[in-house]
Image 1 (cartoon, helix red, strand yellow):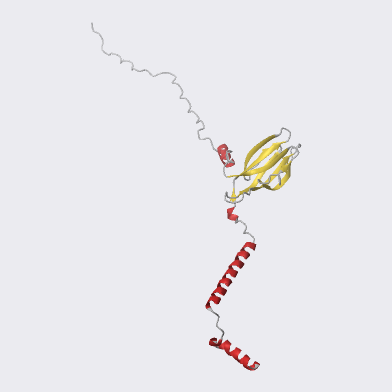
Image 2: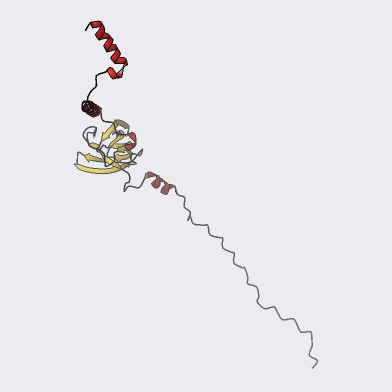
Length: 210
């Protein structure tokens, strides 16, 4: 068979399906199954290589109270104290002010951090900023405040505290005294002389003729 005739037969097979070579049914099914397995394996491999999605910002819990611990290096005494957000508590010569305190749900990996500002009251009664940054409860030594006498670190975040909130304390002090003593009415002046109870009897005009 000449090459030109073979080329014509191939062209005819392209445009006429009945002239194409038939593939057995079991072979075609096996090819389809193998292709499906290959695609599934590729998808699984791509998912495994993809980086894990970062937790959504909505999963982060905002807390109104930050719990701290501090140590007095001279006495060796460790004190724990709660501070409400945007409030300042003095520990020794340090003033601690948390700005935010975040935590994670119990179903996620623990991660508790707080943005804190710490000021030092110097011997000449001046305030000097010695720390501004994030503290991490899971790594207390990472960003703890190290002072010559006092150290402070974050212990956790809270939704409630045994310490009353500062707004309630301010409201109690600013509450007006409604039970104020009223001025007493002035005493009535005593009468100079008491009025007679009975009128004097009228004189008798009749005369005794006897």
